[in-house]
Length: 242
Image 1 (cartoon, helix red, strand yellow):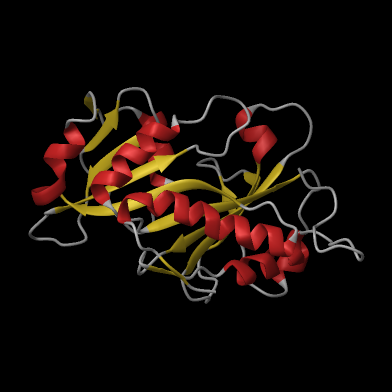
Image 2: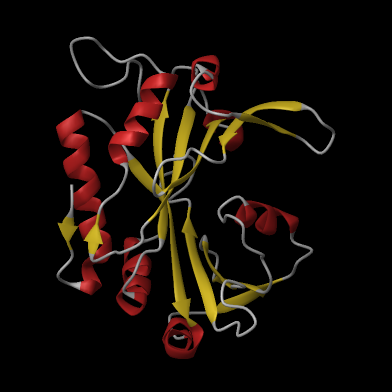
């Protein structure tokens, strides 16, 4: 499943169409919640700063730094800047050290139930400048509690512990051994966002090596979902989904 992207300024629309086509063909409801873009500060930062008021985040702000660390993998969070009050951040990357000419844009909270999402125009403005998407978090939400034991039979699953070593209902597959699928996280979405009722989220971090030839491991992610929740025999959609 490969899609050629002809217009760089429309990368988000092409990504949305790609996911929609898969959803329609498989009777699923996958959505993207996070977008990451690596970019050259030397060539892009001036235009990025012109989009609005970017404020530097103090490292003592544990709420933001903790949330941001969960949205990046194997990278050091150094100086961080936030666009106004949106969940739009960029941080200086160490991926090209010692030159330190790269930065990473992180836009998250795009699939939420407890607050308004980031205006689509803001995301379009950023992508029209950066013309790329490096990775995404793709999520699947459901009301049924996921079957973690079934998942453990196929993957090495780690349960998240608090700083006091208290077990939580958040689980990670940090190395799925699937090309471009970097990590999977399963957690209680209702508890995290103080929502009414039951809601669980399965979230996959997926790398995009070449945005001009978009090919994502969506069928592989679907197979993981099938391990966590039973599918309807007459339909392909999992039972009791949102």
